[in-house]
Structure formats: structure tokens, C-alpha cells
Length: 330
Image (cartoon, rainbow, N blue to C red; front, side, top):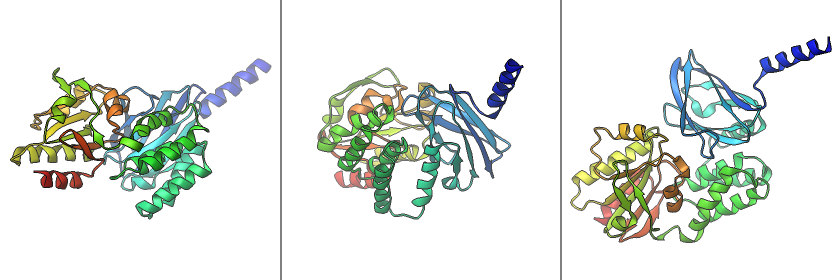
């Protein structure tokens, strides 16, 4: 009898949620009957780029999960939603597909904290948002939401605040020493606190056509641009196209290197078809774990470096700002 009761209890627990070795997302969206989302993990929670299919406005996604990790869901409009995965947890995502910034995520403390933060900054200015980030880090030092907020609002803004970001990340590390995403951000950000500008770091790489690429060709050019892009980021594709338009029309072409952060080189090559890109594109299929991305201190898609005679004179510019700076340099 005891064995039967134990078996029934086990079946009930399994029916009510995922087991302790998996993480699950269940979602329901209005105004979207069918579609597909991309999902990736900047800290190795999953390998490469995965997809989440929507049918009848509903979707589900489950992964093996033995440790906490960060998942980033990329929606059809190329906006992103962080999801904080934990072993044995199941979360619910509900909302209107035409108002993705207002999604409600429930089922775990960290995801509910992220939802509350988004609501709190809904009408805030950039300086106010940065204050909110600092307060969040102070009040929730053990939450993995903190490193994501520092990355998004301090490192991925047009003029990154590396020193403030590094200070906040350090304060988080003492509470989260095993957070892989936090540790990667620290490694990337530390050299930028003192040397975000100056001589381009030396590097060698191989582009998608098997050709050798190095820092030497960029450093020898009067003007050069290094940028990141991905087939799933509309903003980065727009940046790439505007660089191409300028290269085809300007008298003095900048030397350009593109770094594709797709997880599959085939997707990268497909994204280049019929676009007329004639500069080197590197895609090592390692997303933000790419040694080249780390060495150059690139932290987002899109991101960029602007060089003049081999020296980094600007980084993290908006597309409009980058185009304006290039116009003035020729």
C-alpha cells in the first residue's frame, strides 16, 4: 500500500511540473497564432541557437538543466527577453504579442523580479534606468538578474560606462562567485575600464571563406570599422547594410571587418547571400564566447569599434552616430 501511495505521489509530482534535471517554459500570447522565436544562452546553458515554435498562440520549451543559466529569447520583432533558468523550475510567460515589453513571467523569483524591474522602468529616462540598476544590484545582490541589467543598460548603451559597470559587477561577484555569465562580463569589462580606447589589440582569425584575417590590415588603414552582427538581429543587419551602402558610394572606403555571432556558419553564409558584402566576415560559431569578441571587448549585437590609423577612437556607437563619424573622417 505504501509503495502504491509513493508511486501515485511521484506521478502527481511529475504531472505538475518538470523534474529537477530540467527547466521548462510554458507560454501563451494573444495576437500571434503561429511563429517562431530564437533562443540562445550567453553563459553556455544551451549550445548554439535554438528555436521555440508557436502554434495556436501557445508555446513550450524544455531543456536539460543542472545549474542556473541565462537564456535570451529573441522575438520576431528582434526584441529580446531574458529568462533565468533553474533546475527543476517551470515558468509561465503570458502577454500580448503586439506589446512584448509588457510580458508577465511567473514561476520563479528571479523571473518575477525581472518582470517587476521592467514595469518600474517603463517610462523612465536612460539616467533614471541606470539609477534603478544600481539600486537593484544593491537590494538583490544574489540575483542573476543583476549581471544582465548591468550588461544591457550600462555596457550596451551608445556610450558604455565601463567603470561603473565593472564596479557593480565586482559587488555582485562576492555573492555569485559561480555565475558564469557574471564572470564572463567581468573578464570582458576589466580591460575596458582603463583601455577602452587606444591601440587595437593584435589578433588573427579566419573568415567564412577560409581567408586569413588580422589586426594588421585594419591598423594600416586610415579609417576602419569592426562590428558585430547576427541574422537574428534586425538592428545589426541594418548597420551592416548602411556600412555597405557607404562603402559603395564613398570615395574613401573604410576598412571593415564583420564578426557574425550566429551559432551556425551556414546561417551566417545564408544571411550574406545577395547582400554584396565584400569585406571579411568571421564566424567561429561561439557567439559571445568567441575569443575574438572577448579580446576586442565587444559585448552586444550590434556593437562596433571605430578606428583611425590603428587606434580605437570610439566604440559602441549607434548606427546613426557611426555613419556621421565616418562622414566627417573622409
